[in-house]
Length: 176
Image (cartoon, rainbow, N blue to C red; front, side, top):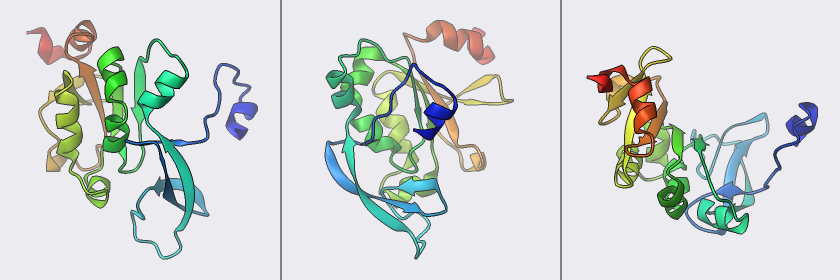
């Protein structure tokens, strides 16, 4: 809210709830010193982590309630809950085929009881391909996240059909 006012942003509004795979209340762990690594799990097992009951909704519910027609891009960085957000957005994904930029950290996935491959398979089954940046600007098509990728956490997912022109433009290896 402070950032919206401070930056005089007029074309957005604040929705005071989290996104997940079901509409529910759940605890969110956080640290008084800041909002970094706030999550549904105490990711670093910190003894001073605080928890607060919060409302969560599915993106499908939000999309329907707001009567939205399109969704072009989703940036998902929710400290281990990425799969749950996607599961709660399945119908919206099938309808809109947005581009995804998703932070995937194997350690956080494990803390939330799934594997990074589960995110990849979920989106592949909806017609998406996985990409990473190789030099900050060029996309590289991927089949999986390799262990040597430590330090790389942000991955793009483009729908094979809807984003074909964009993939061809941004991924030189696909031009062959």
